[in-house]
Image (tube, rainbow, N blue to C red):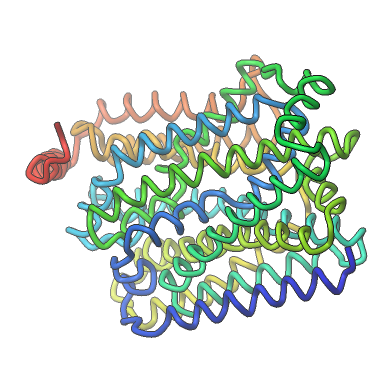
Length: 487
């Protein structure tokens, strides 16, 4: 594809997204809640689309396509398991996050944990873990953009140009109007993602195979290996376990449980997300199967989608490229905005409790720029496959799962249990990933998650529970019952 076409498409898309961000700024109020949460006034459809666009990133049409290209139907099982777990967790925890956040004015998930365990250190440690793990995950979005740009143009447009343009777009939309601009652009980008991918997969069926029926017949005859589930239990659990708790442990998505304007919007958010996720997962794996037949023999599976797009007519290639670019930029912008809120709320405010809302927002602007620079630096290293990098990041965040679940359901859980489990579990998980040591063949997330759970329970039982912990849970359950949310 001609480099000028790709560059014009990226710049044109950037201008449209910035215009939407500018429109979102109109009517924007002041204060941290307004900037980081859109004033908690986001309605159902936009809530669902921003949740979907934040969740489904470059991982899907680059990483999941590559994973399917390499390992077949196991990738579909892995992603569908994630979707099922996420919907269940949203139904159970979504109303609880929303009720508590609205009642106490929480801006970030670590802030909620700090309140529940009556310890600012719990919030601080949760924020630090999020920084350590989400910067590599953010770089995945930039890597996806860079690979696409370079692959589509045969290397004529360098990898780093795609990285730079996406970083600029994400930074502008996040700074322009905070959550309002991010959620509005997310909604537009989510629609773009699903429409462009449907158009492209239908074209692939008819252009390369003749019909959808011929596509399935060809894959069944020529690539039966991709239709066999060949994943070992260790591989499946190792990749799936971190994603199973993604909705709770990744603050850029759990923070979105604070933003709906009412509980009815929360329920619609879950419904829209589930429908979007199911369709997008099917499409992504179909692309992986198609790429395995059309462009076989690639050494790097993450290049499967760029290689497939290079075989499409230029106009269609640009359309699906924009869809992937939209997916990655929406996720990156959401993560950067969330991390900036963690920095100002859970790190700076711990050191300077009296900081004003105005100065907090100024610090958020600086944090967004610095975080993007860090992500760009990490992306330039191009470490590992996108799917594995994403799973590694979620594996590190998994150590927060016991503390989050305990905050809502176990009165006996303590701040000491949360701190020890997150710190020790995080260090062990990080060391295992960094050294590539998988004891007995099981992935670091399994060992880290198991150790974290044991430590959380044992230390909590051996220390004094906060006086307000039981009250927190009892009052929340009473409100859930009064609203008919518990049967």
